[in-house]
Amino acid sequence: MTVITYQSKRVLKIVQSGKVYRAHRNIGMDRAYSALVEILGLHCECPIFGCLRFRRQCTNGKVSSSAKLVLKVPDECVKLTEYSVWADFMYHIQYTKPADYTMVAVDSVEQLSQAQLDKMIHSLKKQRRPLAYHCPQAILEEIRPEWLVDFSLHNKESFWQRRKG
Image 1: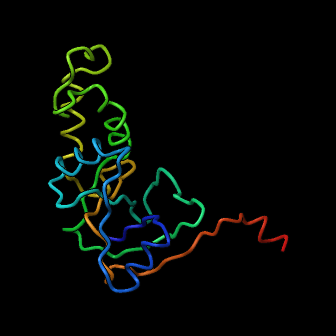
Image 2: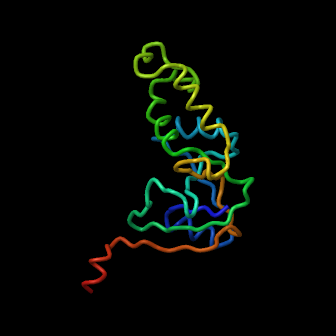
């Protein structure tokens, strides 16, 4: 499966040096990311997000000093989720019990029902064919050097700034 992911230039250097890159915990998103790792049965601290080539993307990922990595990943190493379901889950996790993302907090039933939460978790867990997703999001445990097919760098200056010079 061809996966496109936007990472820092530091990640590109790690992979180009022949080492495997594994993401570290993101303190601000730790609860949602830890839940996703558990839901998908991943073996990592933090998931790595990407999109599938030639499929609808939710963002172009271009930020200053980023690198676009094109990876050829074995199918068994890619988990897919519907981007909108993941976005909804990230927002709604605030309404779950602090120690259990699978249960709605008692004081939050007006914002989120248990049935809605169960449906989101089920959708995230269920793996389908790539074409069955409206906007598929690829999730990896790691980036292996042998998966790197191509890359491009995005510099801090915009196209128009480069053109003036």
